[in-house]
Length: 236
Image (cartoon, rainbow, N blue to C red; front, side, top):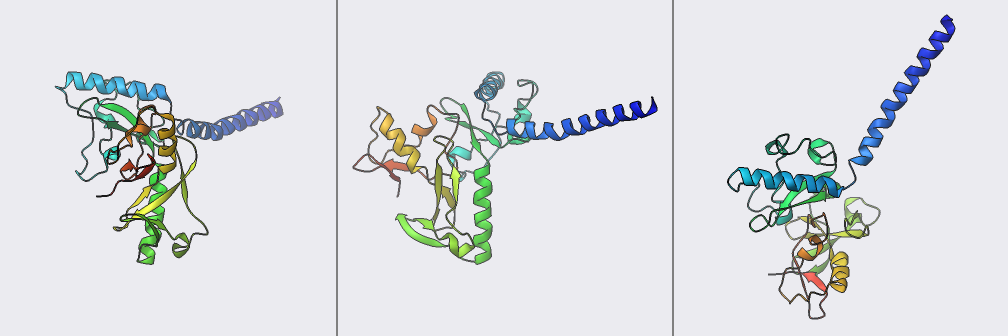
């Protein structure tokens, strides 16, 4: 009987350890999925907060120079738990990989997200550039916009990030100040082919990516169209 009891305890212990190992992995995968239901829940919480706080928005303060699609991160401390029972599991603040932000804050505050793994890739490249002492400019693709020579900073090949829109591999570019950006040209080209809209030269077109998506084009430069109605970097 004692041997049976010990065996039973070992089985229970093994099951407990296994479930403990499996849960974090399951939770991790859930934290990497952009559920639209979670975004909608945050949207409702933001709207309720704004209604009850004289039009104020639950956002963190960012420098005026912050790129527009990263400029208004949601401050979950202001809406949870009063307006939102719990912070979404896929939000950075709860161990996820997505940053929740607001767009169109003046006219129609809308909740969107972006993948923070892009930031990690950019950060790693910047560290290598700092170690090398000089930005590895390769080819000028627009005024003050260049491709990178990755071999100069120790990479074996070009570095890409995953597009939240098409799933394609998007390249990175760098400006004269050493700031690195994601090149969304491929995604914008596809959008321009599908949309009935016809943007004019000089018109900013990144909004095309956000209209029917949960995502914003984070870490991007402004784009417009050329005479062929194809996406190009907007230069001064």
